[in-house]
Image 1 (cartoon, rainbow, N blue to C red):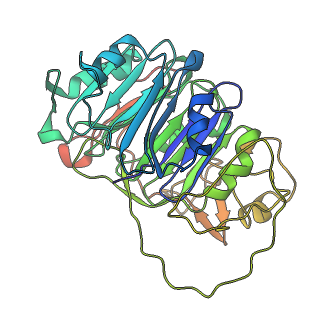
Image 2: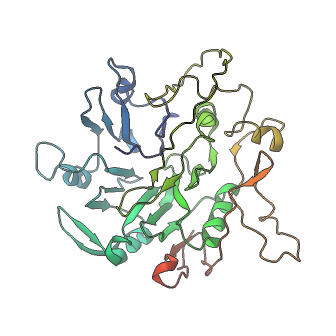
Image 3: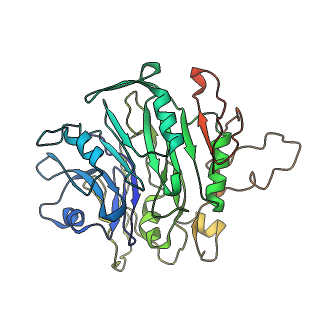
Length: 376
């Protein structure tokens, strides 16, 4: 059973971060937080999405091995999609993903069907252009399923990111924040999205994002209250691979190598947030080093940010200077240094330019990779 990487944030400093080996949460709705404190404990969280006005959806594997879900205040079309007039959910909970956005917008999908409502106009157009046929039980996508959306994230003010099974996609970023602008340049310059696992956007935090590459490297701008938990996970996120199914890129789980046990320093208990390890994670695998303001652990913080920063901003990905005989541009000089190496370098050849903060990308293997126009 696949546990996908999940990052979601809500109002009142609520968040939930999840990977196959670690989860962390804070200020979740009481019914959701009770799942993490009950006895016996749950084994896995498969999906958790937070929306406006207390809306949430969570699916989880309980101690008995069965999969259950809880939800509250979902948009009516989403409830109809999940149940379709049946007494219980008819969708495949092992592959079901739910993206909740503002104004009761959503995009929900499992391995065989999809449903959406109130999407930003450019995203809805991109989805409909890829759709072949659809009924209550099955959604068929063009190019033998390669055009199926496999990752969708909805942000504030109509911002969104979508990638497809075949590596195509569409995006529109609204924020003028420096990291978001750099991320937009990275997306414009990428040949396709085959190297992007997902760009996580948050309706309640317009300037925040996490860009996760399929290599497992992540770039982010997050609010300060998330730093202690995110710093434990940032350098331990798994590499991912996109399967032929219309589901998010799946983590590649590597077998751990035998290692000599080392004594771990005892850490003072942390308050007001929770980050228990899952049953798959070794105890004390990543103790927090106190005093770092960056969401990335040392040596990144030590090399790049010797003084605490006011914002959790990690530099956006960069690509090589296309003309080695000239000095790199200001954007090309950006990058996060980790163990002396520039992280997030993606050799990508631009196949066009968008006219704004958005665009449409076609995978190289299916033809022209030109960018469509986008709006900020």
